[in-house]
Image 1 (spheres, helix red, strand yellow):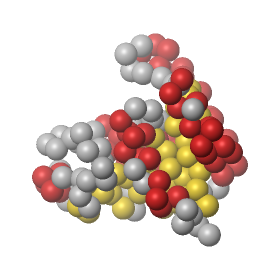
Image 2 (image 1 turned 135 degrees about the horizontal axis):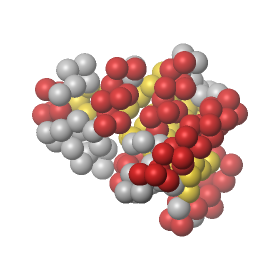
Image 3 (image 1 turned 90 degrees about the vertical axis):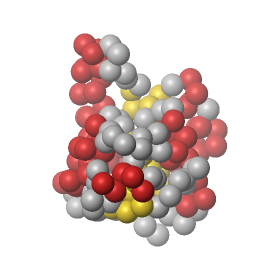
Image 4 (image 1 turned 30 degrees about the vertical axis):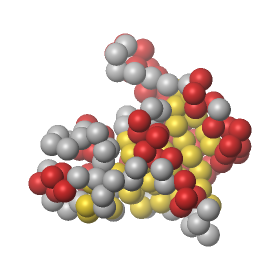
Length: 156
């Protein structure tokens, strides 16, 4: 069974990622998101299949930098422990280091650009687009911004 890592930050990106839950049963999956009060409840449902990174926001730039560095090292550790063959993500900053780590180890990267954007590219989308094996957009208009992307419609 293929090992697939599903990763995103908390909030709307995680909500989008969890729309893929019907796929989980088809894979040896693992989920990574940020640790918040709301995401800790996911442990009851997913148990050992979920891990957490430190929650960080760019609103506090100074502490964000150090937490981001900490999350990079934690991502290296988690990647080595999980050893996925595929990484599926809806973004954002939480997922970018993991995708680059995965690419170093020849992991396949699947990025789903957020439903929220119709006419602009996200920062995580811009960073992961060049290394992705499959880049999925949820709006046809996004194909102008990401010419190699695949339009798959909404995941909601």
